[in-house]
Structure formats: structure tokens, C-alpha cells
View: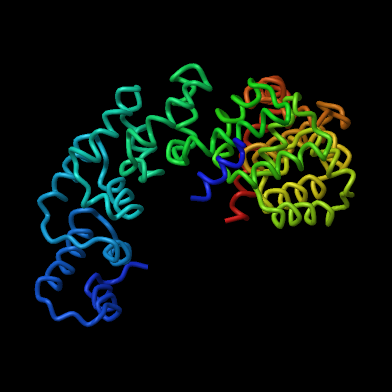
Length: 381
């Protein structure tokens, strides 16, 4: 019954501004009203000169708003500036949600800002959240934002965890508590424990606002792959599966198989570390080419240690393998050195173990390492 009710609720290049305006006017219905013409001109002028939009974006935004007087709009801009929004951030706000420029500063905008500031969300954090999800500013505080926040507070038990989730996914406040509640119910009904549910929402809050049918489909798929709902790996597998379409998943599999991976090996690696499949198609291909061409790793190494697809090619794989290559060529370390471990440890650990320790025996090591990295990066640019 709950599922039925939930589904009903859920289903319910810079150019001249004058040239842009001229093209825009040509798309409008024939209107002879002088007042409308003046308002259109004022709108474009205000969006570009006062709000900082580019001519193209001003034309696009002007399709949704018509500024007849700048009195209220001036107050809107004054409010944003008073809370530290830069000209660029204001342009982002208005470009993403043009109707903000006509909103009531006192009744509509300021209460939302004050609410967040009362929670300790201010300064850069507040501005980032609102620029990402401008709809927060025009969403009902009483009917939507407060209920969603209270729901999350009940789940997480502390405001700090709610704020952390909000910073990671600003859209979580406007997706509707009924969506979140339904998806949480799905996880619970499949046996996912509360700590895992909280971890999913804090780590990937966007996951909990996925459509109900899609959410349940992915939960079932993960279970069918053999992941136990009570295991920590379940939510990682769920996130990985739900973060991409089936076509993208298949494209990534195809790339791996082009390098000799079998279906079983892909599945084995996914069981070891489900997040490895969240790497982009480009990154998977580049890392496979590097590992196999450089000869520092073999396919079985990657199947056993798929976390190596989550490291940076430029900042980690290339420089570290270059260091190991220099050290082995000088006989300072064994050729069977554990490359997986060397690529997996922290930057500080690697530098202490391989750079600082051998710098007297190989003083040119650091310079060679830096030159190698810059050369590879330069060839990619």
C-alpha cells in the first residue's frame, strides 16, 4: 500500500549583443506594443549589464522573464551581493533560473538564505549549494525544504550529517521526501541495514533521489549479481550500477574485453571493487594502454586489484612507474617489486619509500621523475 501511494505522489563564441537581440526579435510574434518592446530591450540590457550574462545567455534567459521595472530586480542583486555572491556567481544563478531576478527578495529569497545560515551553512558553501541548485531559492520553505530536512535529520540523527549530504548533493532538498522515503523503504525491504543506508546517502546523496522504479530495478540487479544486502559492498555495487545507463556499462565492458578481459574477469573485479566501473570510458582505456604497454602490470594484476582504475594516470600511475623503472634499471630494487602496492599507497608513503630512501644512491631520480611526467603530459596536450 505504501509503495502504491508513494508512486502516485511521485508520478503526480562571444557575439555582439545587438546582433543577438536582433535575431531574438525575429523569433517573436508580431507585437506593435511600444511598452512590450521597451521591456524586452530593458530585459536584455539588464541581464547583460547588471546580471553579467553573456549576450547569448541573456537572449536565452529573456525568453522566460520580462523586466518592466528594475526596482525589484535591483533589490534581488543587492541581496545576493550582501551575502557575498560574486558577479560570476550571480550570472550563474540568473542564467540557471532567470525567474530569480523577478522574485520577491524579502518573502521568497531571504528566508531560504537565513534558514541555511541558521544551520551554519554560509559563505562559500552556501553560495556553491545555491549555484548548483537554484530551485532551492524558489521552492517552498514550509512545504518542501523543511519537511525534507526534518526527514533527513531523523535518518541521520545529526544536523552535521545532513549538511554533509546537502553539500555533496544540493538537489536532495528539492527532490521530495516521499521519493527518499520510498527508496529507503526499498533498501530496508531487501535487508540493507540502517548504517549502510546512511552511508549511501551521506556518500552519494544523489542516489536516494533516483526514480522509484529505476532504484528498485538496480537494487534487484545487484542482489542477482550475488551481493549480500548486509555486506558493505552492496551499496558500492548499487551506486556503481545506478550511476550509469546499461549502454554505458556495456561500452565499458567492451573496452575491457578489447584488452583481453573475459566476462568472468570483469565480474570478478567488480565483486572485488564495484567502484572501478565508475571510472570513465576514456580513463579505463588510457590506464589499460599504459599498464600493458609500459609492462608494469599484467591483466591478472588488474583483475585482483581493480582499485588501480581509480588512480590518476598523470598524477600517480605515470610518475610512480617511472620511478620504479629507474630504480630497477640501476639495480636498487628487485625487478619483481610489488607494483600494485606501490601504486596503491599514499603519495607520502611512496615518496618516503622510493624517493627519499634512494635519493643519495640515485640523485637524478627526482629530476628524471619530474621530467618524465611533464613530457608525457605535454604529449597529451
